[in-house]
Length: 366
Ligand code: F6R
Image 1 (cartoon, protein in one colour):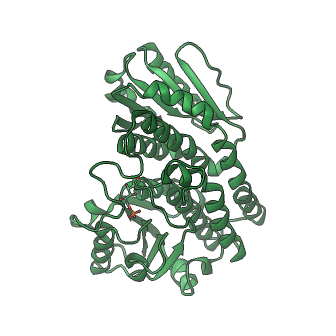
Image 2: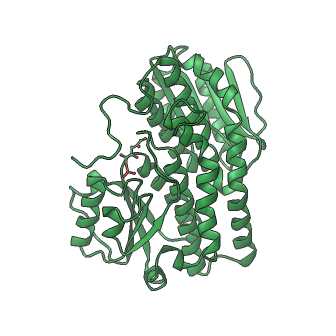
């Protein structure tokens, strides 16, 4: 079953061009950004909503965190995202005109399921599940469903489920924009083209594996790592830190780079590797000045960027560049290097990559 791969996680990382292509094909076959993509009653439901509330756990929560940037920027609807185990136990104020979106690879995560039930008890009637396992509990309890086509995910650390969730969430953002009259035809064609190019861009990122393996050697003896990103790439920094901590057991934290001087900069010294997700976007110059703050304290920088930024490597600054700038879908492409960095660091440390200690694939208990 593993073919040429050593672990399911490695196999699943490499399956991403295929998983994404399958998920994208389902979107484009269904006339791209039409409500029917989310189920037969979706037109009525999505037309009426005035906002979006996303609920999820772990990596799926980070997918929702990327989606918040997309939904507000592309559709103009307000969007909030909350960890399901927090939402379900607080006194929340429901706006039944908001769509509840749960995100779950397994469709069985107890906290996400209970958060959905709680939302319904508060009066929410419009619910959408983004899920990878057909007929699992959460999609069965939801009015609308979008199934990611990642295929079975066996490694405990989520990889291909995350990137395919992002594609489904992007399609949701664009569909909502279309319903709101905010999608000119040339923009729609542009987004379809962006989706068509995505599997190829992800393959290019996978081809960086040898360079990332050499970075992993530098991380192997470390005790701590810091991940930075800004805007839509901040959740990718969070995802990179989660992957590294859960499979290599290196303590890793992620911050929005603008928060550095509000506290975490105190941690930076020459023993602290700092990973920066820094593709070309409107915030690149801001990220560069954050990087100088790290360098000035002796922190070693490991920068993931793309073809359109003008970074160069220097003393204490390592740069890996994806070969194309992919615009709005950039967070998906920049997920690949952080997954591979975690994988190769764990491999070198000899941990049980597919079954990290203390963790279960599907969390059906509290
Ligand atoms: C991390 C990871 C977990 C899951 C979380 C939610 O790599 O896999 O954080 O993302 O347990 O699981 P699902 O998506 O099945 O609800």
